[in-house]
Every structure is written in C-alpha cells, then in structure tokens.
Image 1 (tube, rainbow, N blue to C red):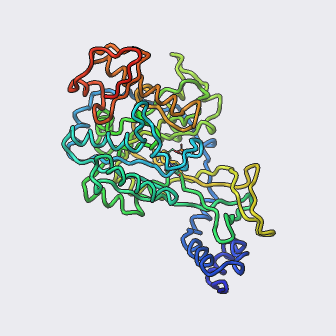
Image 2 (cartoon, rainbow, N blue to C red):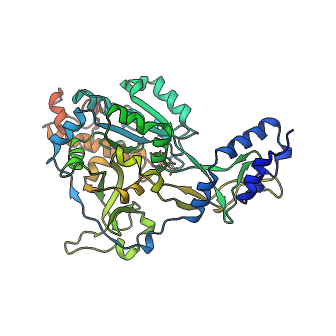
Image 3 (cartoon, helix red, strand yellow):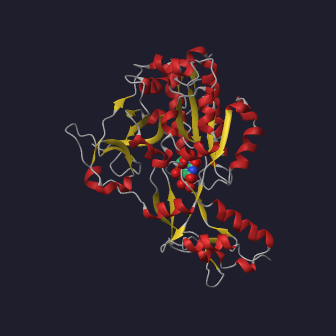
Length: 450
Ligand code: UTP
C-alpha cells in the first residue's frame, strides 16, 4: 500500500475535494493507481468554472427568429460543394440512450421497418450513396463515449463499415465531467472512482479539437460539416438544397440549421429564437409560456421553429468555438459512496448536478446563421423511447410514409396497408427513383424493400 502522493493531496485540498481520498488506505495498489490516474485527468480549473456558470437565458432579450423555407434555389451550389469534396458528416453517438433501454450503443439499434438496418447503417449508406452519386469522398466523423467507443468500433468493422472505406471514418471520444452534490462536492462512484458523466453532445466541438479531427478535416479540404444525431433515420445526411442555401449570399456563413414547425406550443423541443440579436435554441423548459403560446396575425406560433438537431457548421468556425460554449446543469439521481459510512447509496430523488454542453450553443457565436424550415414528415422520425411517442414504432410508420410518398411521386400506386422500405443505397429523394425499376403497384398485403 502507498501513502497518498503529497501533490495530489494538496491539489484536492486546494479545490475542496479532499474527501475523494477518504478510502485511499483501503485500496489495493491497482485501485490507488486507478484513482490517481483518474484524478489527474480531471480538469479542476474547468470544474471551478462550470460550478459557477449555468444557463441564464431567462434574463436575456428573447425575440422570434426569422426562418426561410427549404427550397431548391441554390441546389447547384450545394452539389458543387459536395463534388468538390468540401463536405464531411459529423454524427454524435456518445449518448447513453437511457430512454431507449437498448443494451448496446444506440447506433446499433435496428431502425428500419423491414430489413431492420441499424441507425449507423442508415447514415453510412446515405454517405455511400451520395459519394457515388456525386463521385466524391465524404468522410464521416463519429463521436463516441468512453463507454461505447470500443463496441462502436467493433460494430463498424464487423459490418465492413457498411461499404465505406475504413480510412474515411474518424472516431473520437467525447469528454467527461464530474457530477457534484448540492454543496459542490464531487462524488465517488466507488471507493476508487470519481462519478463522472459525459459532457453532452456539445462536447463534440472540444472533442473534435482534442482528437485532431479538425486538423484532419483541414488536410482533406473539408470546409463544412453536416451534423446529424444518431437517432433520426429520416435525417437527410447530405442535402444539396440545405448546403446550397448555407453557402448562398455570403461565403462567410458559419452555421445553418433546419427547423420544423412545432405541432403545438407544449411540444418538448428546443425553439429557435433571437436572443440579444443572435440566433439561439432555447430549451422548451426555458421559454416562458406566454411566449411559447404567442401567435402572429396569421395564427402561426411566433416561437414555432422547433429544432430537429440538423445543422451545417463551417470547420473554421468550430476551430474557435469550443471555449465559448456554456454549461447547462441538471439535477439528477447519481449513485455514490457515502464518505462517512463507506456505503453505496442509490438515491430515490435527484441528489446531484450533472453538467453538459449542447451543440446548438455554438449558434449564437456564428456569423450569418440561417434557420431553414423543412418538412417534419420528410426529415424527423427520432427513436428516443422503447415504446409510445418517438419510438421505433412511430419512426417505422414515418419512414414508410415517406417511402410511399416518394413512390407515389413516381406514379406507383401504393396501398396504405402495404409495408415499404427504401434503402438509402437506392434513393435519397423521390427523383432518384427514376433510375430504379419500380413496380406499377404495391398491394395491401405486400412487403416491399427496394
Ligand atoms: P439525447 O439527448 O437524445 O440522449 O441525444 P441519448 O443519450 O441518446 O438518450 P437518453 O436521453 O439517455 O435517453 C441526442 C444525440 O446526442 C448524442 C446522442 O448519442 C444522440 O445522437 N449525445 C448525447 C452524445 O453524443 N453525447 C452525450 O453526452 C449526449
């Protein structure tokens, strides 16, 4: 057994966290080493800053945000950027997926209605299709977490990267931050381990910097990233119309986002607002209800642009955005070891604060941000829950409905009772189906995967 390294002891005392060493003398050498190593990786200065900060949106001047419709006016500009190899895809897949309750990483969850393709496969195949269609290379940057990185890598390799070159996939892990109790004390998850939580999808900006991802993009000539989350199989990963609008008017635009109209004022999605003159996504819980329900002369919600987590970011912009993002704190249940008794406590109610960053918090710092309204039916079918709303059941229905609309647009008679799936390798829009040998009709009991 080793005595507590004096430097470590002093450091923890300086930050009022000496209690983390309470059980040091009970630990074996390996456990002491583990705790020492972990404590060295924690950024205590950042921890002090994050304890002091939280979201202050309610004290800011919040106004409605202008949106424009997603149209094809700049489609060719978008295609040119894709063909020039300027576009990469950025996916955040480090989440814990607690609501879904799936045993593996969420990206391995079977998402499509007939063939059961995983969420990773749906994105990978869209990239494969676009790379072939535009005769280019589109690299894929995937953020994982310490918990799911190894299994995600194995899953992609076991599946031959779903047709992508291994060298065009760049995996990197997100950061972690300590959870703290109501008095600002970090908690011990075990006697030899501090309780940590992932730093949120907004951790992606710092993680890209840390991992060398941004440099890798620069060497490839990637200038813009299409950001998609792992759990929305309807997300158009490479959308020339969206990219074209983003690149229109001014070449220096640093971010653009898609939104959909909220179905009702109480829908639990973040809302695009103008806050102190900048585009910002305000969480539904932070938007005062008098604003959430306010309507314009035409009856539409004034704060109606719901965020569906689809963005375009300029790579250069992300290079300087990481340090500026705020922390959000949430009161959660965190199990811990009581330093008085040594007992493991599983709290019944929230006992600690977890700190996270949200990716949309880069938007206020971006120049020229466009918020572009797209159709919910075409682009939003998230899988968040095991059943009910935003589950695979609702997502399957929405995926099928879009597939049926695409087929009908090509003159196929489709029974509403049929079951249909269109592979991302077959088409990325209704027009692509012109190249496909289609049936004249799909009858009510038919199950058709194209
Ligand atoms: P969610 O906020 O829906 O979280 O993530 P989740 O972890 O998937 O699910 P719950 O809330 O635990 O049920 C939205 C997206 O952000 C990613 C997720 O992987 C998903 O793509 N994410 C979230 C991260 O990459 N890291 C995080 O720390 C949190």
